[in-house]
Amino acid sequence: MTDQNLKRFCILICNFDFCILIFGFLCGCQSGNLYKDNRVLMGTFVEVASEDKRAPEIVFNEIKRVESLLSKYKQGSGVSRLNKTGKIQASPETFYVIKKAKEFSEKSGGAFDITVGPLVDLWGFSQKKYRVPDEESIKEALKLVGSDKIILNSRNNVIELKIQGMKIDLGAIAKGYAIDCAVKKLRESGIKSCLINAGGQIYALGTKSGRPWNIALRNPYKKTFKEHFKLTDKAVATSGGYEQYFVKNNRHYSHILDPLTGYPAQTRIASVTVIAGDGLTADAVATALYVLGREKSTRLLNKYPGVTAKIYEEKDLR
Ligand code: AMP
Ligand code: MG
Image (cartoon, rainbow, N blue to C red; front, side):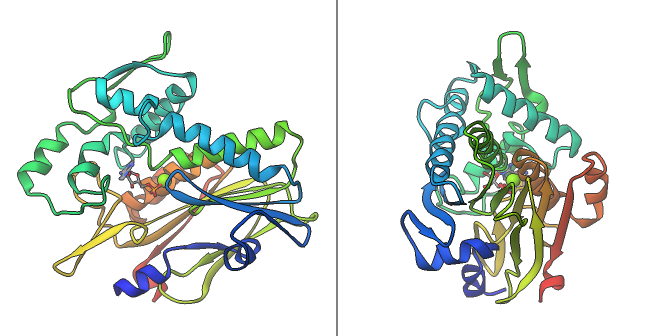
């Protein structure tokens, strides 16, 4: 795949109801019977469409709140304090997300692992200063990787990292959780219909004028739609190697790393789309499946009844 193609299809999921928003409006507006707005939050473009005027603001405020808890880039967030000091008394939410992340790590046999922080830094993905590290540095960084080295004390919400230098990165799960929180707030406010798209992490709340929301999965290699979903009260998450990557000596290095090897995952997968009842699960499982590859995907999916996945290798999309 050429760089040009990759860039052209940086938005993998295109929601039909959002197409109008993307091309027509860049500020809060009403289109048909939908109120639509967008904001850059959690390092991505967050779009909201709802029949209720209050929905976009509720969603943005909630995502912002979660970002301030979970982002490793936000000074003072629980995660950045943990990365700095190695031990914190976490907020109940931070504790919950890290506990869930540890479970995903166990269930995926280590394919999903939020302790990839040192590797993400080493490959230059945190600062967007990409490089191919030497093997020795990867070996050293791998000593700091492994969710078994996160100690959780549920009596007092204290989280401790066993080895100095360990770093947590919730990039593969935080957006899904943020969307879940936003949906909870919408429901509490009596809002029954809303579509949220946070950089490919989607939640379809209720219906649009009585009919399920229409989600289109775009082929990252062609200007066509690969798949359509009609969804109500479901989360969709997509992980793809084209989302963030660099090319060196004709090799493509993606931001999703294999915590067992220390190198970008190399499972021939172009993209994985997961549908689940909640955003956190969809987000984490999509990343895990990208690392595991098609052959090992069933084993993980069997552990999550009701969760489904569409896995595409490059050859399926060409
Ligand atoms: P996603 O786009 O949800 O698949 O998340 C990718 C992001 O999660 C990366 O940009 C890293 O910050 C982080 N990450 C990379 N590899 C892994 C992994 N194997 N497990 C958990 N998080 C990862
Ligand atoms: Mg993810």
